[in-house]
Image (cartoon, rainbow, N blue to C red; front, side):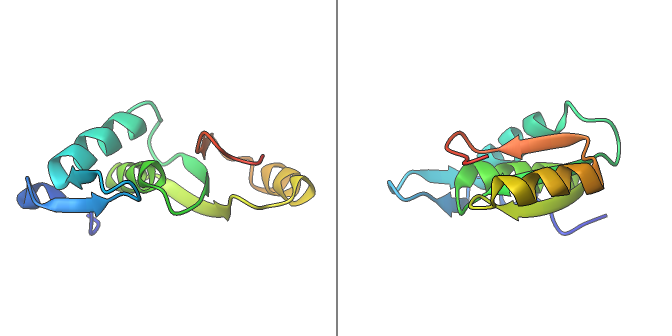
Length: 102
């Protein structure tokens, strides 16, 4: 069990306020998070290439709720370092935001 298993008790409370002031409730976050993580086999290694965005948080929460192993990588990683991470860790899944640099 992890800290994200009990988010549903917060229901309609606000979980995230985005830069454009769009509000996302815990129920919405859980629905999106669980949908994102539902495509992976159990305990997959997920490389999240991210910045501080709601979609990244949704992925992170979903992956942890389903007991996947998560590795965060800054969106500004160089291509050389990114390739080295892929070679060394061989992740099962890459989760990138739309504006990713890699």
